[in-house]
Amino acid sequence: MNRSFMLEGSRKQLINQLVYFDEEKIAFLNTYFPAQDLKRSIVEGMITTYITAVEAILENFNYDILHSRALIGSKLSVRYMEDQSTETFTIVFPHLADPDQNKISFISPMGYQLLLSQANEICKLEYPSSVERVEVLKIQFINCGEY
Image (tube, rainbow, N blue to C red; front, side, top):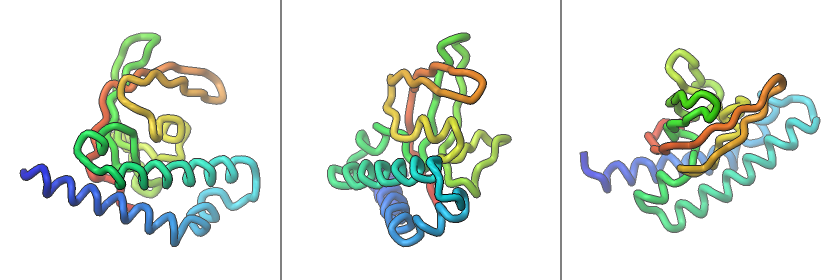
């Protein structure tokens, strides 16, 4: 498949995400975080940060920059530092999450903490009952960020 054709599809997907968040951010937040609380504020801030990052990626858009950060629609390979096991999953919108297919929501604890991470970055994933460190081995935007 032609790389420029794939790039254009990915570019369009990211633009569509920006349009979605511009037009539907409040409805999205009301659906998943109806209470006006700290968690909603944190996610709203994360979405704002994500929008800024995607805009920067689109400004200098090329193959390398597309695969440089974990985006909604990116496939990540990570290594758990404790036991050196590896896992691959894709970050998606919440309604597309499917643990059986290794698709995790960007608002899930893991998705939220890995969104915008970079290859070779070591991330600390904090959960209510534990903390895990993972190394992001590879990021590949696979155009799976539809909403």
